[in-house]
Image (cartoon, rainbow, N blue to C red; front, top):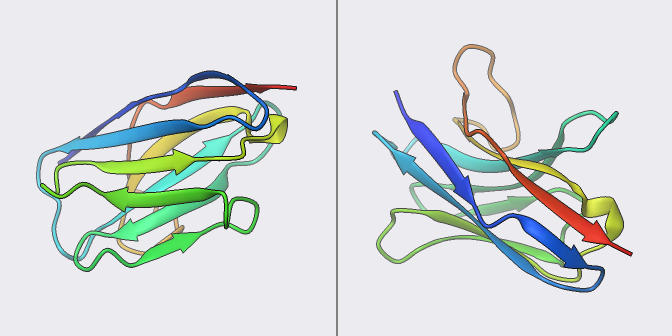
Length: 122
């Protein structure tokens, strides 16, 4: 089993930047993918970005491509989401999740963090 701890959320003005981090405790295997999803009040969960643990290959949702960057730190201990050019519509709770397929929630097999709030003011 793995636990995922998110950090780095907060309040920022439109156009600003935030950096989220996800630190797993427990085993992350080469077959795993670490993802960021988000959910705003009254809206469905949305895929944001993902990175393959084995080779660092990255994937992005259409709404964030070109503004957000997902990366793994050099020590391989954490995954980061650099968010630039933030918009009010980026306001949501951001969740880190471990899957085996990028952007795909696998019932009974996906591990979730507790989430971190990101609020972008206009």
